[in-house]
Length: 144
Image (cartoon, rainbow, N blue to C red; front, side, top):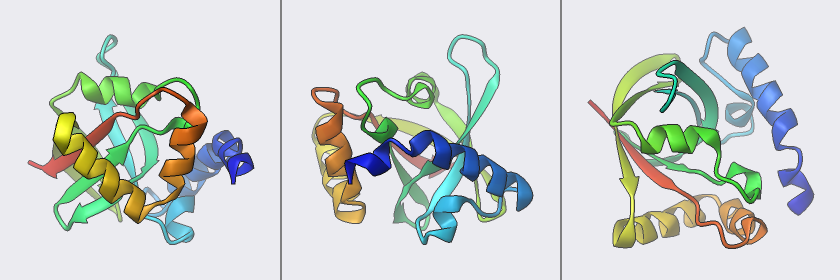
């Protein structure tokens, strides 16, 4: 439902709190049965590590698909601009930290990934409608 997308900032605060309490092993999304991670990537201008909690689409045991939906807002999330400028990042999920290689998906690879993302989490289609003409950035993360 569209009103759920407006609660994103509240969910983000709860997510950070639960992650802090569980030392990164769990987040609100995990408790709801959805896969989530903490992504740490260097700021594209500052070079300072930035950490954000995100829903991800499990591609295989060794790959993660991230969708820059920003809760259906008209602007891209800042983490996606940082990730687009990066070649690697760090994922913290289930109490495990791993370095990952970043691939910003474009063209046919992006379209195939979008289909998989919507099949996994249909809410992405609603968020895309809310975002209007903005095409979400999609990324595949692979352990290094």
